[in-house]
Length: 181
Image (tube, rainbow, N blue to C red; front, side, top):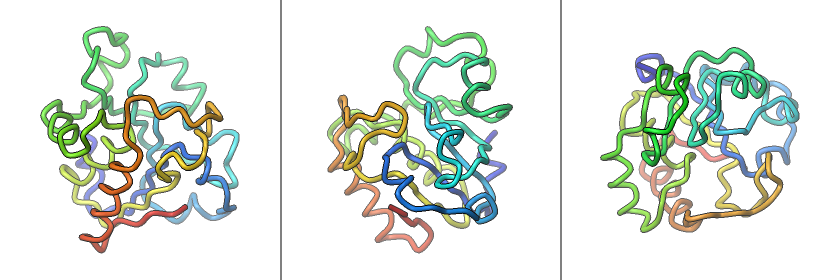
């Protein structure tokens, strides 16, 4: 399971807010132990800002093996977050993903009062199931900036304010979660 690889690790989790590319971070590939990307937030166009390493991809999109390889290269660890439509996933994802637990989704949905985004599900998954040393969040700006791969601010069924408050609470109550905007 993915979580076994995260114990006592310094993790960089990249959300898809454009704010993650506002600062050049030329040494970011050497600053963390594990690099997690979300959906189509590939580093290929923005390496100077978000590095090039990808160890884990968190998905709520039904991407096939070729699409994932085009975006990230050879990534062996995948986690599928959304509990919806899992029965329609392609065989590659069905056979190669760990899955965010549906009971966590139900609890998080109740806390937020809206459908959780892939990013907030991944934060919750890491918080609940891994024993990370530090979690560094990039591009989690509450949809204040456009998405780096669609260039729009489509929020969908998510509530940016409640997700930001959830992250703020984790940061306040922990000395091991950090947001970089």
